Image (cartoon, rainbow, N blue to C red; front, top):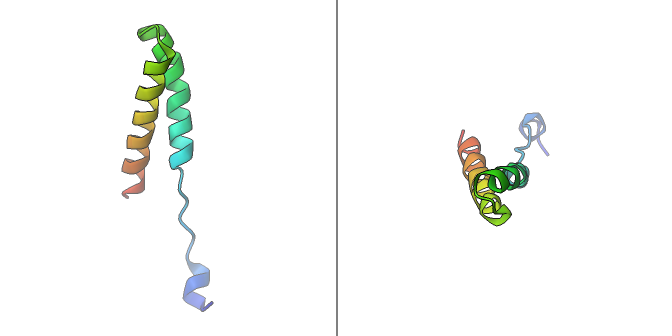
Length: 58
């Protein structure tokens, strides 16, 4: 490994974390708003994926 490779910080991928956090919040939101955990889980996971892809594009 040369000197240039040592100084670069590896990129981290937080997509799994964003999906998990979005799904967790979606479960709570879905239970109160739609009275269905499944709908909130899908919406929360979708928001987590979208947030992760927007955050990764920097």
